[in-house]
Amino acid sequence: MQNDSARPRAFLTLAVLCGINFMNFYDRQILPVVQDDIRKEWELSDRDLGLLGTAFILLYAFVGVPLGRLADVWKRTWILSAGVAVWSFLTAASGMATGFRSLFVCRLGVGVGEASCAPTASSLIGDLFPPERRARALSIFMIGLPLGLGISSVLSGWIARNYGWQAAFYIPAIPGLLLAFAILFIKETDRGHADQVPSSHAPLPFAQALREVLSRPTMWWIIISGAVHNFNMYALGTFLTSVIRRYHRMDSTEAGFASGLVWGIGALGMFLAGWLGDAAFRSRPSGRLEVSCGAITIAVPLILLGLAVPSGNPWPFAFWLVLTYAMMSAYYGTVYASIQDIIEPSLRGTAMAIYFFAMYMLGAILGPVATGWISDSLAARAAQSAGVTVTVGPTGRPAIADEFRAIGLHQAMYIVPALAVVLVVVLFAASRTVGRDRERLLSRMEALRS
Image 1: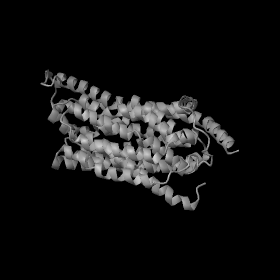
Image 2: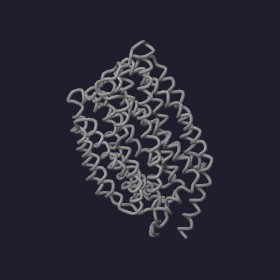
Image 3: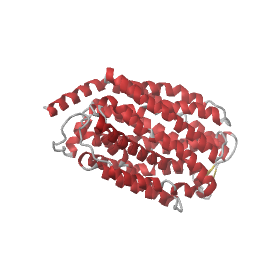
Image 4: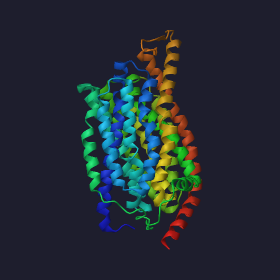
């Protein structure tokens, strides 16, 4: 158990990490908020927007694996500091882009920096908080996700409307660089501290560490769940503001405010799930995954109700999406803590990096691009059904009126509840195997203590 004198340092570290995660997702959300302005200025398609939304993920996924492994063997605060500095600088550089290609390259660079965040921070939190409080701690860390998305949706929309979309990329560089400096003053925690296991044993070679992590059946189910969930979350993150602007006919500032409410108020679900997950874990190892499974089950009818709201009614739509996101955000603290429930401290950075590699390569990359492609196809079909001939514009892309693009994007959003049903099945399967994998971990840590 953690003694009283160590708690202030643990919570100070958690606060800094939450701030870093906040800027992580604030920076990511700028592009979805201003992308319709960029689309009109550069004459892009929804498929192009999907590619921009996933550009940084290409390097995020690949670079994340060696960075996650580095988090198991090197000083984690240094890794985080360098990563935050890199992505803050390149977010500002995104505002200087002069076309699709230069913005694409900047987003790739942002992905390199942001790849340092989740594996390294999760590993630090696992060593600061004991198992029975870990889901709450990880939920507080992950609150940076909806709060970053929400506040960025509001501020970036306001900045873009008053000062141009480029300015929206410049502002977050300053707090990002300050946090990169602040993390250097955080004292590194010994690996295995919260689990009361020694950290002096030599780290496993990477190939052996990889086999060890993937030898847990629960890890495979969690990896699949991450791919499905991230597809949905990145589809929503990329296009929610656009749905509100196009289908429900709001301007950029109002749409940013509405989507900001979805992300911000939805954070309450993440925090509540952390408490419920820890309480359920005390009675059974599968408790955290059962909480996540139940929350996603509730999210399915909620988003269907939101999508059923007629065009031009943004606030009823936002109401149902707030509830939907509150349920969907329950996934993070509970599932991230479940990974640490089955993986020993010396492998947690590697485990999170492997999980994120699959989650982003199979989920986050496909989510925006696939949703954008479906949106373009359905928009063209809507135009043709209305008797409008779809022509090729000067950029070589289909010239489709905004009224049909609104219909296409709205219909494309139905992929989210469909995949949420798949996610429920996967999380239920994980909850059936986690008990055995937890017992295996406890046996190994007992051997390390003796």
